[in-house]
Image 1 (cartoon, each protein chain N blue to C red):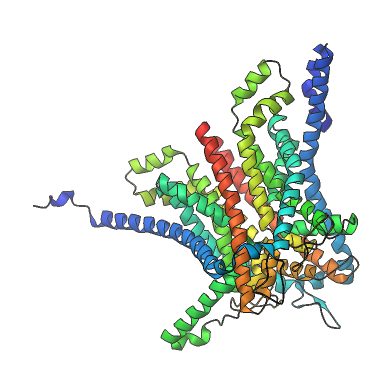
Image 2 (tube, each protein chain N blue to C red):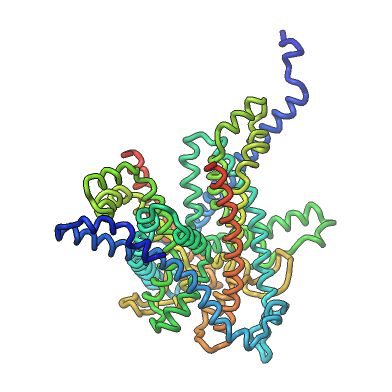
Length: 330
Length: 294
Protein backbone atom coordinates (compact mmCIF):
# COMPACT_ATOMS: atom_id res chain seq x y z
CA UNK A 1 0.00 0.00 0.00
CA UNK A 2 2.78 2.34 0.91
CA UNK A 3 4.52 2.01 -2.42
CA UNK A 4 1.37 2.58 -4.42
CA UNK A 5 0.70 5.53 -2.23
CA UNK A 6 4.11 6.89 -3.08
CA UNK A 7 3.82 6.66 -6.82
CA UNK A 8 0.18 7.01 -7.74
CA UNK A 9 0.28 10.76 -7.89
CA UNK A 10 2.95 11.58 -10.41
CA UNK A 11 2.28 8.57 -12.65
CA UNK A 12 -0.27 10.29 -14.86
CA UNK A 13 2.04 13.24 -15.23
CA UNK A 14 5.16 11.35 -16.18
CA UNK A 15 3.43 9.85 -19.23
CA UNK A 16 3.04 13.30 -20.67
CA UNK A 17 6.30 14.69 -19.41
CA UNK A 18 8.43 15.05 -22.48
CA UNK A 19 11.13 17.57 -21.63
CA UNK A 20 14.10 16.69 -19.45
CA UNK A 21 13.28 19.41 -16.97
CA UNK A 22 9.80 18.06 -16.47
CA UNK A 23 11.17 14.58 -15.87
CA UNK A 24 13.65 15.89 -13.28
CA UNK A 25 10.83 17.65 -11.55
CA UNK A 26 8.79 14.48 -11.44
CA UNK A 27 11.71 12.48 -10.08
CA UNK A 28 12.36 15.12 -7.41
CA UNK A 29 8.72 14.94 -6.51
CA UNK A 30 8.85 11.17 -6.03
CA UNK A 31 12.03 11.35 -3.99
CA UNK A 32 10.75 14.13 -1.74
CA UNK A 33 7.54 12.26 -1.21
CA UNK A 34 9.42 9.12 -0.27
CA UNK A 35 11.68 11.00 2.16
CA UNK A 36 8.71 12.69 3.79
CA UNK A 37 6.90 9.39 4.02
CA UNK A 38 9.82 7.71 5.75
CA UNK A 39 10.00 10.55 8.28
CA UNK A 40 6.33 10.09 9.07
CA UNK A 41 6.74 6.34 9.30
CA UNK A 42 9.69 6.94 11.64
CA UNK A 43 7.23 7.80 14.39
CA UNK A 44 5.84 4.29 14.19
CA UNK A 45 9.36 2.91 14.39
CA UNK A 46 9.87 4.99 17.54
CA UNK A 47 6.79 3.59 19.25
CA UNK A 48 7.53 0.01 18.25
CA UNK A 49 11.15 0.58 19.26
CA UNK A 50 10.19 1.82 22.72
CA UNK A 51 7.95 -1.13 23.34
CA UNK A 52 10.45 -3.66 21.97
CA UNK A 53 13.31 -2.22 24.03
CA UNK A 54 11.32 -2.16 27.26
CA UNK A 55 10.14 -5.70 26.61
CA UNK A 56 13.48 -7.21 25.58
CA UNK A 57 15.53 -5.47 28.27
CA UNK A 58 13.18 -6.55 31.02
CA UNK A 59 13.06 -10.22 29.89
CA UNK A 60 16.22 -11.20 31.85
CA UNK A 61 14.74 -9.46 34.90
CA UNK A 62 11.61 -11.56 34.76
CA UNK A 63 13.81 -14.66 34.50
CA UNK A 64 15.45 -13.76 37.81
CA UNK A 65 12.33 -12.44 39.51
CA UNK A 66 9.04 -14.26 38.83
CA UNK A 67 6.47 -11.92 37.36
CA UNK A 68 3.99 -12.78 40.10
CA UNK A 69 6.45 -11.74 42.82
CA UNK A 70 7.18 -8.54 40.93
CA UNK A 71 3.55 -7.51 40.54
CA UNK A 72 2.30 -8.51 44.00
CA UNK A 73 5.38 -8.04 46.16
CA UNK A 74 4.96 -5.42 48.85
CA UNK A 75 8.63 -4.62 49.40
CA UNK A 76 11.18 -2.96 47.12
CA UNK A 77 14.64 -3.36 48.60
CA UNK A 78 17.54 -3.50 46.19
CA UNK A 79 20.24 -3.48 48.83
CA UNK A 80 20.90 -6.26 51.29
CA UNK A 81 21.65 -9.94 50.91
CA UNK A 82 18.18 -10.91 49.70
CA UNK A 83 16.97 -8.08 47.48
CA UNK A 84 13.22 -7.85 47.06
CA UNK A 85 11.60 -6.53 43.90
CA UNK A 86 7.94 -6.02 44.68
CA UNK A 87 6.59 -3.18 42.58
CA UNK A 88 3.45 -2.47 44.64
CA UNK A 89 4.99 0.25 46.87
CA UNK A 90 6.11 2.11 43.76
CA UNK A 91 2.72 1.70 42.07
CA UNK A 92 0.91 2.91 45.20
CA UNK A 93 3.31 5.85 45.44
CA UNK A 94 2.51 6.78 41.86
CA UNK A 95 -1.19 6.34 42.55
CA UNK A 96 -1.05 8.71 45.54
CA UNK A 97 0.63 11.37 43.42
CA UNK A 98 -1.77 10.86 40.51
CA UNK A 99 -4.96 10.99 42.59
CA UNK A 100 -3.70 13.93 44.63
CA UNK A 101 -2.71 15.89 41.55
CA UNK A 102 -6.11 15.17 40.02
CA UNK A 103 -7.82 16.61 43.11
CA UNK A 104 -5.90 19.84 42.52
CA UNK A 105 -5.80 20.08 38.74
CA UNK A 106 -9.26 18.84 37.72
CA UNK A 107 -11.52 21.26 39.63
CA UNK A 108 -9.18 24.20 39.17
CA UNK A 109 -8.48 23.42 35.51
CA UNK A 110 -12.15 22.98 34.68
CA UNK A 111 -12.96 26.23 36.48
CA UNK A 112 -10.30 28.11 34.55
CA UNK A 113 -11.43 26.49 31.29
CA UNK A 114 -15.04 27.57 31.88
CA UNK A 115 -13.93 31.03 32.89
CA UNK A 116 -11.77 31.43 29.78
CA UNK A 117 -14.40 30.33 27.31
CA UNK A 118 -17.58 31.68 28.93
CA UNK A 119 -16.79 34.61 31.19
CA UNK A 120 -13.42 36.19 30.46
CA UNK A 121 -13.29 39.48 28.59
CA UNK A 122 -10.95 39.42 25.56
CA UNK A 123 -8.45 41.60 27.42
CA UNK A 124 -8.29 39.21 30.35
CA UNK A 125 -7.92 36.23 28.02
CA UNK A 126 -5.02 37.94 26.32
CA UNK A 127 -3.13 38.01 29.62
CA UNK A 128 -4.39 34.78 31.16
CA UNK A 129 -3.64 32.46 28.24
CA UNK A 130 0.07 33.29 27.92
CA UNK A 131 0.34 33.11 31.72
CA UNK A 132 -1.06 29.58 31.65
CA UNK A 133 1.25 28.66 28.79
CA UNK A 134 4.15 29.93 30.86
CA UNK A 135 2.99 27.86 33.83
CA UNK A 136 2.86 24.83 31.53
CA UNK A 137 6.41 25.56 30.42
CA UNK A 138 7.94 25.83 33.90
CA UNK A 139 10.43 22.97 34.20
CA UNK A 140 9.62 20.15 36.54
CA UNK A 141 12.74 20.78 38.64
CA UNK A 142 11.46 24.25 39.47
CA UNK A 143 8.23 22.78 40.78
CA UNK A 144 10.36 20.49 42.91
CA UNK A 145 12.10 23.49 44.41
CA UNK A 146 8.73 25.15 44.93
CA UNK A 147 7.46 22.07 46.79
CA UNK A 148 10.46 21.94 49.10
CA UNK A 149 10.71 25.63 49.81
CA UNK A 150 7.06 26.64 50.01
CA UNK A 151 4.46 23.86 49.78
CA UNK A 152 5.85 21.54 52.46
CA UNK A 153 6.52 24.36 54.96
CA UNK A 154 3.02 25.60 54.17
CA UNK A 155 1.47 22.19 54.86
CA UNK A 156 3.40 21.84 58.10
CA UNK A 157 2.41 25.31 59.21
CA UNK A 158 -1.20 24.61 58.33
CA UNK A 159 -1.25 21.43 60.39
CA UNK A 160 0.42 23.12 63.34
CA UNK A 161 -2.21 25.85 63.21
CA UNK A 162 -5.04 23.32 62.98
CA UNK A 163 -3.65 21.44 65.96
CA UNK A 164 -3.69 24.64 67.94
CA UNK A 165 -7.31 25.50 67.23
CA UNK A 166 -8.65 21.92 67.19
CA UNK A 167 -6.49 20.07 69.72
CA UNK A 168 -9.00 17.22 70.07
CA UNK A 169 -8.55 16.25 66.41
CA UNK A 170 -4.77 16.39 66.44
CA UNK A 171 -4.24 12.59 66.79
CA UNK A 172 -5.87 11.98 63.38
CA UNK A 173 -4.04 14.77 61.59
CA UNK A 174 -1.24 13.64 59.30
CA UNK A 175 2.28 14.59 60.17
CA UNK A 176 4.16 15.91 57.16
CA UNK A 177 7.71 14.72 56.78
CA UNK A 178 10.27 16.96 54.98
CA UNK A 179 9.62 14.99 51.83
CA UNK A 180 6.00 13.90 51.51
CA UNK A 181 3.51 12.61 48.98
CA UNK A 182 1.10 15.51 49.49
CA UNK A 183 3.58 18.19 48.45
CA UNK A 184 4.51 16.15 45.37
CA UNK A 185 0.87 15.67 44.45
CA UNK A 186 0.07 19.36 44.87
CA UNK A 187 2.88 20.60 42.66
CA UNK A 188 2.13 17.95 40.01
CA UNK A 189 -1.44 19.24 40.15
CA UNK A 190 -0.12 22.75 39.46
CA UNK A 191 1.87 21.38 36.53
CA UNK A 192 -1.08 19.63 34.91
CA UNK A 193 -3.56 22.46 35.56
CA UNK A 194 -2.75 24.33 32.31
CA UNK A 195 -3.22 21.12 30.33
CA UNK A 196 -6.71 20.61 31.79
CA UNK A 197 -7.70 24.25 31.39
CA UNK A 198 -6.60 24.63 27.78
CA UNK A 199 -8.15 21.35 26.62
CA UNK A 200 -11.38 22.09 28.52
CA UNK A 201 -11.51 25.55 27.00
CA UNK A 202 -11.13 24.07 23.51
CA UNK A 203 -13.85 21.51 24.19
CA UNK A 204 -16.23 24.10 25.66
CA UNK A 205 -15.74 26.72 22.96
CA UNK A 206 -16.39 24.12 20.25
CA UNK A 207 -19.96 23.72 21.51
CA UNK A 208 -22.22 25.37 18.90
CA UNK A 209 -23.56 28.79 19.84
CA UNK A 210 -27.07 27.82 18.83
CA UNK A 211 -27.29 25.40 21.78
CA UNK A 212 -26.47 28.17 24.22
CA UNK A 213 -28.88 30.60 22.61
CA UNK A 214 -31.69 28.07 22.72
CA UNK A 215 -31.11 27.56 26.44
CA UNK A 216 -30.95 31.28 27.12
CA UNK A 217 -34.12 31.70 25.11
CA UNK A 218 -35.87 29.28 27.44
CA UNK A 219 -34.91 31.51 30.36
CA UNK A 220 -31.89 29.72 31.79
CA UNK A 221 -29.36 31.67 33.79
CA UNK A 222 -25.80 31.56 32.52
CA UNK A 223 -24.68 28.97 35.05
CA UNK A 224 -27.67 26.80 34.14
CA UNK A 225 -26.75 27.05 30.47
CA UNK A 226 -23.21 26.00 31.31
CA UNK A 227 -24.15 23.13 33.61
CA UNK A 228 -27.13 21.75 31.76
CA UNK A 229 -26.24 22.38 28.12
CA UNK A 230 -22.62 23.33 27.45
CA UNK A 231 -20.80 20.93 29.77
CA UNK A 232 -22.86 17.86 28.77
CA UNK A 233 -22.21 18.73 25.12
CA UNK A 234 -18.48 19.09 25.72
CA UNK A 235 -18.14 16.16 28.11
CA UNK A 236 -16.01 13.96 25.82
CA UNK A 237 -13.35 16.60 25.43
CA UNK A 238 -13.44 17.42 29.13
CA UNK A 239 -13.04 13.78 30.15
CA UNK A 240 -10.20 13.42 27.66
CA UNK A 241 -8.43 16.38 29.27
CA UNK A 242 -8.79 14.79 32.72
CA UNK A 243 -7.36 11.48 31.52
CA UNK A 244 -4.45 13.18 29.77
CA UNK A 245 -3.65 15.19 32.89
CA UNK A 246 -3.68 12.07 35.07
CA UNK A 247 -1.52 10.26 32.55
CA UNK A 248 0.94 13.14 32.64
CA UNK A 249 0.98 12.88 36.45
CA UNK A 250 1.77 9.16 36.25
CA UNK A 251 4.82 9.90 34.12
CA UNK A 252 5.98 12.99 35.98
CA UNK A 253 9.46 12.51 37.32
CA UNK A 254 11.61 15.33 38.63
CA UNK A 255 9.11 17.20 40.81
CA UNK A 256 8.08 14.02 42.60
CA UNK A 257 11.66 12.84 42.96
CA UNK A 258 12.49 16.07 44.76
CA UNK A 259 9.25 16.62 46.67
CA UNK A 260 8.01 13.16 47.56
CA UNK A 261 11.25 11.47 48.48
CA UNK A 262 13.06 8.25 47.77
CA UNK A 263 11.72 5.74 50.27
CA UNK A 264 9.65 3.03 48.66
CA UNK A 265 7.00 2.11 51.20
CA UNK A 266 3.48 0.85 50.95
CA UNK A 267 1.48 3.66 52.50
CA UNK A 268 -1.62 5.68 51.79
CA UNK A 269 -0.71 8.44 54.22
CA UNK A 270 -0.07 11.63 52.22
CA UNK A 271 2.28 12.91 54.92
CA UNK A 272 4.72 10.05 54.41
CA UNK A 273 7.76 9.87 52.24
CA UNK A 274 7.11 7.65 49.23
CA UNK A 275 8.73 6.72 45.95
CA UNK A 276 7.10 6.64 42.56
CA UNK A 277 7.99 4.35 39.67
CA UNK A 278 9.63 7.24 37.84
CA UNK A 279 11.66 8.26 40.89
CA UNK A 280 12.97 4.72 41.20
CA UNK A 281 14.14 4.77 37.58
CA UNK A 282 15.96 8.06 38.18
CA UNK A 283 17.44 6.76 41.41
CA UNK A 284 18.96 3.73 39.71
CA UNK A 285 20.09 5.72 36.66
CA UNK A 286 22.07 8.14 38.81
CA UNK A 287 24.52 5.39 39.64
CA UNK A 288 26.48 3.88 36.81
CA UNK A 289 24.56 0.87 35.65
CA UNK A 290 25.19 -1.33 32.66
CA UNK A 291 23.49 -4.18 30.90
CA UNK A 292 23.72 -7.49 32.71
CA UNK A 293 23.13 -6.06 36.16
CA UNK A 294 19.77 -6.82 37.69
CA UNK A 295 19.39 -3.18 38.69
CA UNK A 296 19.70 -2.11 35.05
CA UNK A 297 17.11 -4.71 34.08
CA UNK A 298 14.75 -3.75 36.89
CA UNK A 299 14.26 -0.20 35.64
CA UNK A 300 13.15 -1.54 32.27
CA UNK A 301 10.58 -3.72 34.01
CA UNK A 302 9.27 -0.64 35.84
CA UNK A 303 9.43 1.33 32.59
CA UNK A 304 7.35 -1.33 30.86
CA UNK A 305 4.58 -1.00 33.45
CA UNK A 306 4.77 2.79 33.27
CA UNK A 307 4.57 2.70 29.47
CA UNK A 308 1.62 0.31 29.43
CA UNK A 309 -0.35 2.35 31.98
CA UNK A 310 0.18 5.68 30.22
CA UNK A 311 -0.37 4.11 26.80
CA UNK A 312 -3.73 2.71 27.90
CA UNK A 313 -4.75 6.06 29.38
CA UNK A 314 -3.72 7.94 26.24
CA UNK A 315 -5.63 5.53 23.99
CA UNK A 316 -8.69 6.04 26.16
CA UNK A 317 -8.32 9.81 25.93
CA UNK A 318 -7.92 9.57 22.15
CA UNK A 319 -11.21 7.71 21.94
CA UNK A 320 -12.98 10.47 23.81
CA UNK A 321 -11.35 13.09 21.59
CA UNK A 322 -12.52 11.17 18.52
CA UNK A 323 -16.06 11.05 19.87
CA UNK A 324 -15.94 14.79 20.29
CA UNK A 325 -14.66 15.60 16.81
CA UNK A 326 -16.99 13.05 15.21
CA UNK A 327 -19.97 14.66 16.82
CA UNK A 328 -19.19 18.26 16.03
CA UNK A 329 -18.62 17.40 12.38
CA UNK A 330 -22.08 15.92 11.98
CA UNK B 1 -42.68 53.74 45.12
CA UNK B 2 -41.47 50.19 44.53
CA UNK B 3 -42.58 48.26 41.48
CA UNK B 4 -45.74 46.17 41.79
CA UNK B 5 -45.41 42.80 43.49
CA UNK B 6 -45.96 40.76 40.31
CA UNK B 7 -42.89 42.34 38.73
CA UNK B 8 -40.64 41.41 41.64
CA UNK B 9 -38.57 38.30 41.04
CA UNK B 10 -39.94 35.28 42.87
CA UNK B 11 -37.99 33.59 45.61
CA UNK B 12 -37.14 30.79 43.25
CA UNK B 13 -35.76 33.20 40.67
CA UNK B 14 -33.74 35.00 43.30
CA UNK B 15 -32.21 31.71 44.38
CA UNK B 16 -31.33 30.86 40.79
CA UNK B 17 -29.71 34.24 40.28
CA UNK B 18 -27.71 33.87 43.44
CA UNK B 19 -26.49 30.47 42.30
CA UNK B 20 -25.51 32.03 38.99
CA UNK B 21 -23.48 34.70 40.77
CA UNK B 22 -21.78 32.14 43.01
CA UNK B 23 -20.83 29.94 40.07
CA UNK B 24 -19.28 32.86 38.26
CA UNK B 25 -17.30 33.74 41.37
CA UNK B 26 -16.05 30.16 41.65
CA UNK B 27 -14.76 30.26 38.07
CA UNK B 28 -13.12 33.64 38.59
CA UNK B 29 -11.57 32.30 41.77
CA UNK B 30 -10.10 29.32 39.90
CA UNK B 31 -8.52 31.66 37.37
CA UNK B 32 -7.13 33.85 40.15
CA UNK B 33 -5.65 30.80 41.88
CA UNK B 34 -3.96 29.72 38.64
CA UNK B 35 -2.37 33.13 38.17
CA UNK B 36 -1.50 33.31 41.87
CA UNK B 37 0.38 30.00 41.63
CA UNK B 38 2.49 31.31 38.77
CA UNK B 39 3.04 34.65 40.50
CA UNK B 40 4.00 33.06 43.82
CA UNK B 41 6.38 30.69 42.08
CA UNK B 42 8.14 33.44 40.20
CA UNK B 43 8.15 35.73 43.24
CA UNK B 44 9.58 33.07 45.53
CA UNK B 45 12.37 32.16 43.11
CA UNK B 46 13.08 35.82 42.48
CA UNK B 47 13.34 36.76 46.15
CA UNK B 48 15.49 33.73 46.95
CA UNK B 49 17.83 33.98 44.03
CA UNK B 50 18.16 37.51 42.71
CA UNK B 51 20.95 38.40 45.11
CA UNK B 52 23.15 35.71 43.64
CA UNK B 53 22.65 36.45 39.95
CA UNK B 54 25.49 38.44 38.45
CA UNK B 55 27.99 38.11 35.65
CA UNK B 56 30.34 36.04 37.80
CA UNK B 57 27.56 33.54 38.45
CA UNK B 58 27.29 33.00 34.70
CA UNK B 59 31.04 32.90 34.12
CA UNK B 60 32.21 30.57 36.90
CA UNK B 61 32.10 26.81 37.17
CA UNK B 62 29.97 25.02 39.75
CA UNK B 63 31.43 23.96 43.06
CA UNK B 64 30.30 21.56 45.75
CA UNK B 65 32.50 23.14 48.39
CA UNK B 66 32.09 26.89 47.98
CA UNK B 67 28.43 27.71 47.42
CA UNK B 68 29.05 31.44 47.43
CA UNK B 69 31.62 31.26 44.66
CA UNK B 70 29.93 28.63 42.53
CA UNK B 71 28.70 29.56 39.05
CA UNK B 72 26.75 27.89 36.31
CA UNK B 73 28.98 28.13 33.25
CA UNK B 74 29.30 24.42 32.46
CA UNK B 75 25.61 23.54 32.98
CA UNK B 76 24.52 26.58 30.98
CA UNK B 77 26.74 25.54 28.08
CA UNK B 78 25.52 21.96 28.39
CA UNK B 79 21.90 23.11 28.16
CA UNK B 80 22.61 25.27 25.14
CA UNK B 81 24.49 22.50 23.32
CA UNK B 82 21.73 20.00 24.02
CA UNK B 83 19.11 22.47 22.83
CA UNK B 84 20.90 23.36 19.58
CA UNK B 85 21.75 19.76 18.68
CA UNK B 86 18.21 18.62 19.44
CA UNK B 87 16.78 21.28 17.16
CA UNK B 88 19.28 20.32 14.47
CA UNK B 89 18.23 16.67 14.62
CA UNK B 90 14.51 17.06 15.09
CA UNK B 91 13.53 19.85 12.72
CA UNK B 92 14.24 18.15 9.36
CA UNK B 93 12.54 14.90 10.39
CA UNK B 94 9.63 16.59 12.13
CA UNK B 95 8.87 19.05 9.36
CA UNK B 96 9.18 16.36 6.65
CA UNK B 97 6.82 14.08 8.55
CA UNK B 98 4.29 16.90 8.93
CA UNK B 99 4.59 17.73 5.22
CA UNK B 100 3.84 14.14 4.34
CA UNK B 101 0.83 13.99 6.63
CA UNK B 102 -0.66 17.31 5.53
CA UNK B 103 0.41 17.78 1.91
CA UNK B 104 1.09 14.42 0.30
CA UNK B 105 -2.00 12.62 1.51
CA UNK B 106 -5.10 13.84 -0.20
CA UNK B 107 -7.39 11.24 1.27
CA UNK B 108 -6.65 10.26 4.85
CA UNK B 109 -6.22 6.52 4.38
CA UNK B 110 -5.83 3.92 7.12
CA UNK B 111 -2.05 4.18 7.18
CA UNK B 112 -2.12 7.94 7.63
CA UNK B 113 -4.73 7.68 10.35
CA UNK B 114 -2.58 5.10 12.09
CA UNK B 115 0.51 7.30 11.90
CA UNK B 116 -1.50 10.23 13.23
CA UNK B 117 -2.85 8.27 16.18
CA UNK B 118 0.62 6.98 16.83
CA UNK B 119 2.09 10.48 16.95
CA UNK B 120 -0.55 11.62 19.44
CA UNK B 121 0.26 8.62 21.58
CA UNK B 122 3.98 9.21 21.34
CA UNK B 123 3.39 12.75 22.59
CA UNK B 124 1.90 11.26 25.75
CA UNK B 125 4.70 8.80 26.54
CA UNK B 126 6.41 9.84 29.80
CA UNK B 127 9.69 11.61 29.20
CA UNK B 128 11.62 9.15 31.31
CA UNK B 129 10.60 6.30 29.00
CA UNK B 130 12.35 8.16 26.17
CA UNK B 131 15.39 8.20 28.42
CA UNK B 132 15.26 4.42 28.64
CA UNK B 133 14.95 4.21 24.87
CA UNK B 134 18.10 6.32 24.64
CA UNK B 135 19.91 4.29 27.27
CA UNK B 136 19.27 1.00 25.55
CA UNK B 137 19.56 2.18 21.94
CA UNK B 138 22.28 4.85 21.89
CA UNK B 139 24.36 3.92 24.93
CA UNK B 140 24.17 0.14 25.34
CA UNK B 141 23.57 -0.96 21.75
CA UNK B 142 25.18 1.70 19.57
CA UNK B 143 27.93 2.48 22.09
CA UNK B 144 27.70 6.24 21.63
CA UNK B 145 28.83 6.88 25.18
CA UNK B 146 27.17 9.01 27.81
CA UNK B 147 27.97 12.34 26.20
CA UNK B 148 26.11 15.21 24.63
CA UNK B 149 25.39 13.31 21.40
CA UNK B 150 23.46 10.59 23.22
CA UNK B 151 21.60 13.19 25.24
CA UNK B 152 20.62 15.25 22.21
CA UNK B 153 19.50 12.21 20.20
CA UNK B 154 17.33 11.07 23.11
CA UNK B 155 15.88 14.55 23.49
CA UNK B 156 15.12 14.64 19.74
CA UNK B 157 12.91 11.57 20.08
CA UNK B 158 11.15 13.26 22.98
CA UNK B 159 10.28 16.49 21.17
CA UNK B 160 9.61 14.94 17.74
CA UNK B 161 5.83 14.44 18.23
CA UNK B 162 5.49 18.03 19.39
CA UNK B 163 7.33 19.41 16.35
CA UNK B 164 5.23 17.28 13.98
CA UNK B 165 1.94 18.31 15.58
CA UNK B 166 2.72 22.03 15.66
CA UNK B 167 4.04 22.00 12.07
CA UNK B 168 0.88 20.22 10.95
CA UNK B 169 -1.22 22.95 12.52
CA UNK B 170 0.87 25.58 10.73
CA UNK B 171 0.44 23.82 7.38
CA UNK B 172 -3.29 23.39 7.93
CA UNK B 173 -3.62 27.13 8.43
CA UNK B 174 -2.33 27.91 4.91
CA UNK B 175 -5.40 28.59 2.74
CA UNK B 176 -6.16 26.01 0.07
CA UNK B 177 -6.38 28.65 -2.63
CA UNK B 178 -2.62 29.26 -2.37
CA UNK B 179 -1.92 25.66 -3.31
CA UNK B 180 -4.52 25.64 -6.06
CA UNK B 181 -3.08 28.78 -7.61
CA UNK B 182 0.45 27.37 -7.61
CA UNK B 183 -0.65 24.02 -9.01
CA UNK B 184 -2.70 25.71 -11.70
CA UNK B 185 0.39 27.62 -12.82
CA UNK B 186 2.06 24.27 -13.49
CA UNK B 187 4.20 23.77 -10.39
CA UNK B 188 4.70 20.27 -9.16
CA UNK B 189 3.46 19.54 -5.68
CA UNK B 190 6.95 19.82 -4.23
CA UNK B 191 7.48 23.20 -5.88
CA UNK B 192 4.16 24.32 -4.44
CA UNK B 193 5.17 23.21 -0.97
CA UNK B 194 8.66 24.67 -1.14
CA UNK B 195 7.84 28.02 -2.70
CA UNK B 196 4.30 28.72 -1.53
CA UNK B 197 3.17 26.64 1.43
CA UNK B 198 6.33 26.52 3.55
CA UNK B 199 7.13 30.26 3.42
CA UNK B 200 3.58 30.98 4.41
CA UNK B 201 3.63 28.44 7.26
CA UNK B 202 7.07 29.48 8.50
CA UNK B 203 5.98 31.60 11.49
CA UNK B 204 3.87 28.73 12.82
CA UNK B 205 6.69 26.26 12.30
CA UNK B 206 9.15 28.59 14.05
CA UNK B 207 6.81 28.81 17.03
CA UNK B 208 6.82 25.03 17.19
CA UNK B 209 10.60 24.91 17.04
CA UNK B 210 10.89 27.44 19.86
CA UNK B 211 8.47 25.44 21.99
CA UNK B 212 10.53 22.32 21.30
CA UNK B 213 13.68 24.22 22.29
CA UNK B 214 12.19 25.29 25.61
CA UNK B 215 11.09 21.73 26.27
CA UNK B 216 14.63 20.54 25.55
CA UNK B 217 16.03 23.03 28.04
CA UNK B 218 13.58 22.19 30.80
CA UNK B 219 13.50 18.42 30.62
CA UNK B 220 15.78 16.58 32.99
CA UNK B 221 14.64 13.04 33.63
CA UNK B 222 15.59 11.46 30.27
CA UNK B 223 19.02 13.08 30.44
CA UNK B 224 19.71 11.57 33.86
CA UNK B 225 18.85 8.15 32.46
CA UNK B 226 21.24 8.57 29.52
CA UNK B 227 24.07 9.68 31.74
CA UNK B 228 24.10 13.44 32.28
CA UNK B 229 25.70 14.01 35.65
CA UNK B 230 24.81 16.45 38.39
CA UNK B 231 28.21 17.96 38.89
CA UNK B 232 30.67 18.80 36.12
CA UNK B 233 33.23 21.56 36.46
CA UNK B 234 34.66 21.50 32.95
CA UNK B 235 32.97 22.86 29.85
CA UNK B 236 31.95 20.30 27.24
CA UNK B 237 34.11 20.48 24.10
CA UNK B 238 33.16 17.47 22.02
CA UNK B 239 30.06 15.46 21.28
CA UNK B 240 31.21 12.60 23.49
CA UNK B 241 32.10 14.68 26.56
CA UNK B 242 30.31 14.14 29.83
CA UNK B 243 28.08 17.10 30.57
CA UNK B 244 25.52 18.55 32.91
CA UNK B 245 22.53 20.78 32.20
CA UNK B 246 20.96 23.62 34.17
CA UNK B 247 18.03 21.67 35.65
CA UNK B 248 20.42 18.95 36.81
CA UNK B 249 22.72 21.46 38.46
CA UNK B 250 19.67 22.87 40.22
CA UNK B 251 18.73 19.37 41.36
CA UNK B 252 22.24 18.85 42.71
CA UNK B 253 22.16 22.10 44.66
CA UNK B 254 18.67 21.49 46.03
CA UNK B 255 19.94 18.23 47.45
CA UNK B 256 22.84 19.87 49.32
CA UNK B 257 22.20 20.48 53.00
CA UNK B 258 23.74 23.96 53.25
CA UNK B 259 21.44 26.93 52.92
CA UNK B 260 23.80 28.78 50.57
CA UNK B 261 23.35 26.04 47.99
CA UNK B 262 19.59 26.61 48.11
CA UNK B 263 20.25 30.23 47.24
CA UNK B 264 22.50 29.18 44.38
CA UNK B 265 19.74 26.80 43.20
CA UNK B 266 17.22 29.64 43.23
CA UNK B 267 19.62 31.83 41.26
CA UNK B 268 20.13 29.07 38.69
CA UNK B 269 16.34 28.65 38.43
CA UNK B 270 16.09 32.37 37.80
CA UNK B 271 18.53 32.09 34.89
CA UNK B 272 16.66 29.06 33.54
CA UNK B 273 13.31 30.82 33.80
CA UNK B 274 14.72 33.94 32.14
CA UNK B 275 15.87 31.77 29.22
CA UNK B 276 12.46 30.12 28.94
CA UNK B 277 10.52 33.37 29.22
CA UNK B 278 12.72 34.88 26.50
CA UNK B 279 12.04 31.92 24.20
CA UNK B 280 8.32 32.07 24.98
CA UNK B 281 8.15 35.79 24.30
CA UNK B 282 9.84 35.31 20.93
CA UNK B 283 7.20 32.70 20.09
CA UNK B 284 4.37 34.99 21.18
CA UNK B 285 5.91 37.88 19.22
CA UNK B 286 6.19 35.80 16.03
CA UNK B 287 2.62 34.64 16.42
CA UNK B 288 1.30 38.14 17.03
CA UNK B 289 3.13 39.58 14.02
CA UNK B 290 1.90 36.76 11.86
CA UNK B 291 -1.68 37.25 12.99
CA UNK B 292 -1.62 40.95 12.32
CA UNK B 293 -0.41 40.30 8.78
CA UNK B 294 -3.31 38.00 7.93
